[in-house]
Image (spheres, rainbow, N blue to C red):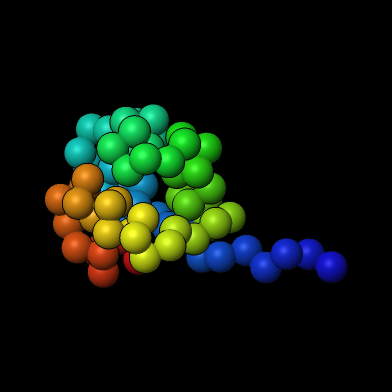
Length: 67
């Protein structure tokens, strides 16, 4: 049985690129690995609320802008 894939977090990638950040840059600011950011953007993993808040702070936006 295939694992259900989450909706890709395309807004996360768009916001990150607009800020001129790499996945590694964002990962360092948030305290996760670059691979984790990649998984979020692809929709293979969804961040916990605490991580969503850190992502929003790092990207200078609100959580609702990311998801």
